[in-house]
Image (cartoon, rainbow, N blue to C red; front, side, top):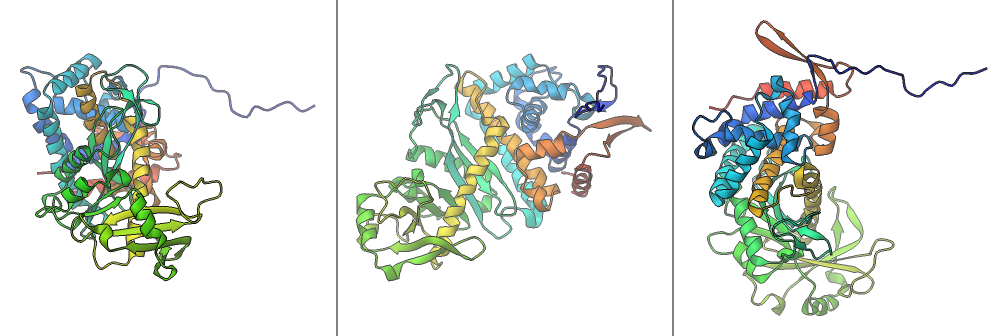
Length: 458
């Protein structure tokens, strides 16, 4: 007679474990904060909001909230996961104290937000300098992607409204620096807007672009070396004119709506004028072609603008739109990059789709919902989310290599941050002993060794 064998071993559970640290891999984020000087910068920026005789530093409290979000938290109360590990995270303020800080910063309006943003901009320049060839400007150009994101609200929060997708919530406009095929990306702007805000509102795109440019090192705040990419929501005359304004001279690659005029010109393009589209590896993209529109169609637009259209066989099951032609899916974008083949420009614009990956990462890092009621408070929350996303981009940039450099937040949490460890105090030193059988312990220790080689901030 065979006895059934269970799939999992039986274990006894006790709640008296000592010197065991959960989320031990989060020391990667803590060491990153220390090496880039983010703690000092945030503390100095928020010094005016520190009350006399206060026990907790406002900068440390805001950074604790950002660390909790980076580790998977989605509300201020999740700072409790740091508070229970004082040997790793130090003293952490209580929930009411952190809530009062958010209220105080929200009451200060743009002054507090600007202080936080200035600290982030200062540290960003240092991180890019430390990253060397892994920095997003290693080829002398910086690409900033603008895109909107819908955030669902499940309660009646300030400025929550019906969205164009028939949901209810808010419609922030975000901007991310693209790290290219060898990395991920980092946030440089998040403009909180009501749920019914328009997708192609020019003033909002300009405001978001200004916030994004202010986050970049000074040499990238104007000039052709900075490329602004958007979908068709940014393809308005006023926004394109703002990007190309004399003295600003930004490069742009913005999607355009297929108007009836563009559609009629497209139908007149001869077959010989279509060029095969290409993939990132240089191979021809099957069933896709590009062409450039010229002539009176560009009258009234900024000088030097090029209008490029692309046609592609639709994927099986895809429904054609009224603007499509001859059974082909038609898209269009404008750019001011001269003397470059249109197939390369179309590929560059198509890579804007990486912004969707950044939005997916943001949703899993505090942007699934806005946890606070008032708009001013949720603006502070967006800054916390951006700090968390900064850390999740800067740590891999400085410490990880290969495939690990591309891991998104969920994978970083599962493989690195969730590692357990034992903390031992000996010789006035605290030693964190990571579990040896964890498959990614080597990744953690190697990354910590790389961070240790970085110079300490002056």
